[in-house]
Length: 458
Ligand SMILES: Nc1ncnc2c1ncn2[C@@H]1O[C@H](COP(=O)(O)OP(=O)(O)OP(=O)(O)O)[C@@H](O)[C@H]1O
Image 1 (tube, helix red, strand yellow):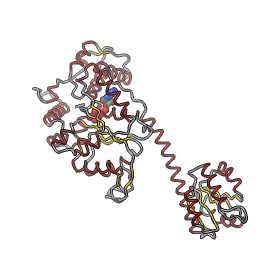
Image 2 (cartoon, helix red, strand yellow; image 1 turned 180 degrees about the horizontal axis):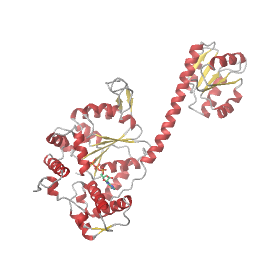
Image 3 (spheres, protein in one colour; image 1 turned 90 degrees about the vertical axis):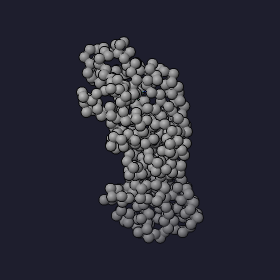
Image 4 (cartoon, rainbow, N blue to C red; image 1 turned 120 degrees about the vertical axis):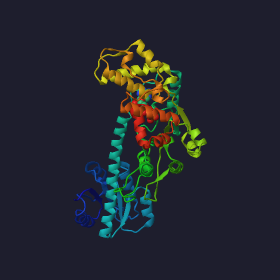
């Protein structure tokens, strides 16, 4: 099917008639102008996709200056509209000048029909791609505004969290690589989103990759993309997360779980600021701001040879440490109240409050699963409570000894979920939080382990 609108400007009526007959076979609409004086009006009213513009209009003057003048006028009106120039003189200097000034291409008269059509069609394809990119960028802008909308958060009043907030605001404005550390559930991902939201890249995407859930074989394709035919399932070209985050922020969660071999591949991409899609040889430049998070001590991992020192230095220009909830007890009641209001509204429970004894119980618990565990505990209590004041009995927290495997918990009366939770908790403790070791010990994959940790708020 024919598509596209071409505007042809030439003062030779014979040329125009010949072009009309030729071009109408390929384009949906062909507009002809015998003088460039009407060019801007035609651009405004007709909105052509491409312009085919003669270089010389005044009889006897063949300097090409008229063409260059009108080329500049078109570009002033819309810098993206492709302009193909037509000249009777194969003047290479003029062609180079016109291309430098923004012409998409150059055709010499008398023209060869096939070449002229090929030139115009490629200019039209360029126009279509530009329009598509513009449309996608607008869509992405809308989406990122929706996704980056202010999240309802509660930071608490502890000095350590206030300092953390100040640090977040300060570092967000720079392009420095940031390493967020903290136990599971402390809010590392929340902090990464906040840093992105306060940064100059906030209109661009924040792309998260869970390194704990990514398999060794899919790593390169997920991060760097692939070209069609690179492997059996690669049915089309696909961009990876680096490209998706171009202009924005790439958040690599659980970076400590990346194998040594893959760490080297990641480092190459970070150092060169280029990626190469699997199956291709062409480097693609990427402009990303990197934020990583981990619950392990990467300095220790460097010491014991499981994490590359050069990668650590590359990713932690600034380290943001989120303290565990047990070390900021003054925030527990605020957070509990915050989640209480959130879930009371979600589950249409009316006004709810925590009794004094309940607050005491929450504050004296050690919250090994941190904010996530508190959030789950409050949600569960809200769903199950009857009155408007939540009592200690509405909160079921296992003694920490149960979870860590140090105590004398018996599995006789446990559900399958509880036993699983107990086993994972004990293994995590034994292995000092090393996910690979825990997964190996329990005979499950790292992604499975990871999803169970999330599920139980461990
Ligand atoms: N300041 C906060 N205000 C409100 N909710 C929070 C806050 N911090 C964390 N949360 C909530 O706690 C849960 C855990 O947060 P998040 O996923 O950011 O933690 P994490 O440290 O990245 O966890 P993991 O190490 O398991 O990936 C989320 O549901 C999040 O919304």
